[in-house]
Image 1: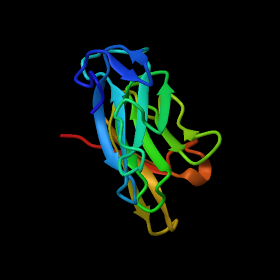
Image 2: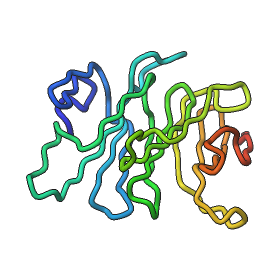
Image 3: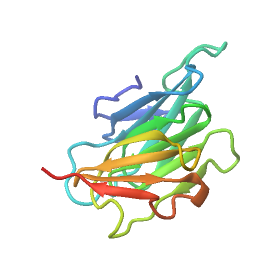
Image 4: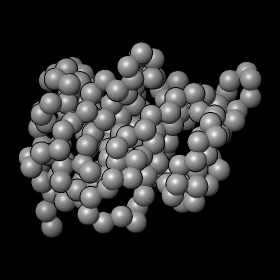
Length: 172
């Protein structure tokens, strides 16, 4: 999508971001905004390479330019996956290489509205998938995340992603 999205240099608004790969894509609830997470799949251990989340309104009147997304957010570590909220087009969740879950509101002045911390009881490996799952009891969409160690956790925006609302460990 963007110049160099296969793992070479990526250019966003003329800023060169070195060695990032497109690690995930999603569509907003309206179907008009494409979001992508950027990170690296070839890392081991800890990641101190900044990741990037980008969003493009592909049906805008002034023409689509893949090098100029409407929304760009850099994070301290690689972003490995992304999911758009199913009913709120401006809300985007992503998972990081270091095990964090992050949620942005692209319509807000301060876009990062919630993030998990790094903790022994949370994810200890890269998050491989985030999804919005409706919780009938709480009557809200929650972010579900799964990491390489098989930990599946649910997070509520009502609590600012402070602690998982539930979780389990998948085993063979």
